[in-house]
Length: 361
Image (cartoon, rainbow, N blue to C red; front, side, top):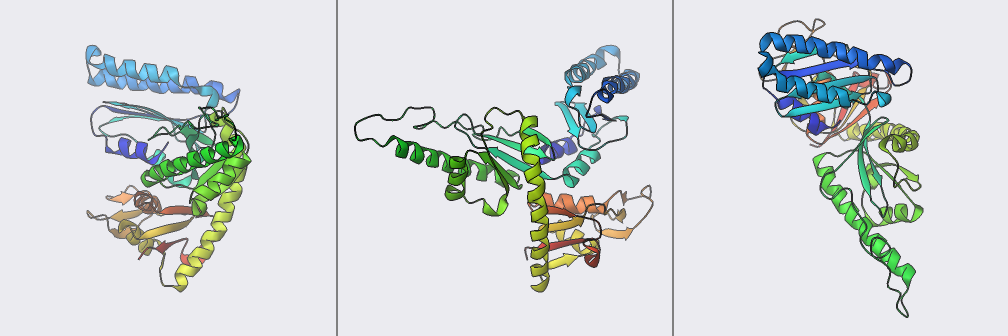
């Protein structure tokens, strides 16, 4: 799951847009219940579609839903599952938290749970440096999806990689290999910069000691690097990879939270900080936030006017113009403007009314 998928689903506006969400289970034998629960929801969707459409008119959509459901791998479920099917859309998303079981048929997809998962779960890239090939993964918590954007995955085509080393008299084969590897790592760094322009996330790098040393020397990702994991993971599956890197990522995020509090203190001293939901939300809408810090359990429903400005905070989310969680909206705006998000333990930001931010201007 990534921000681009959420944006794509959010922009969809065509009937019928089918959303199927259900809680799932990570382990056997509990995950044996999941296919049954999914088929029950699909049956509900089929009945409702057939009430709206003739059988002939509904057949293509029903066939597409059946094919997607049949392809779901329940052996590697997380805590929730979301399926979205509509005109030009067929998406299956596994979620790291449970969602209520429901089926929705509307002009738009039910994407709030995806937005919640994206905003509240640590996201990061894992770069697997290798000669064959170097791969990039977009990860949230212990789940990973390979990024196939631009030139990724990248093959090392120079000496020591796909092509052989020059074995002529007087040739320093070791030096050839080192120079070619450094050049390859630079090209990986350049391509990674392009990906970061689309979505900037904390970075974890894996590879042999030579590759890790070259990455530090030949690229400029120091401020975005949260962890390094030495080893060769050329052929590791996404699941195997996250099992290896996640402990280091957790430590890296802990260190990052501590550093972020120091950054916030410096910004407060320089009068380049905002605190409290009203200030932070307004700054987020203006694209002024570089870093937002939020207590992980902080939520606040609110009513907004037609321009998106705050009218008041509420407890009843069923009121007209009420939004379930203004905190999520603020986080979404920060992400949209390429800012960073750090979640803290409850109570850490009590002196800032549970939410704070450093400002670009």
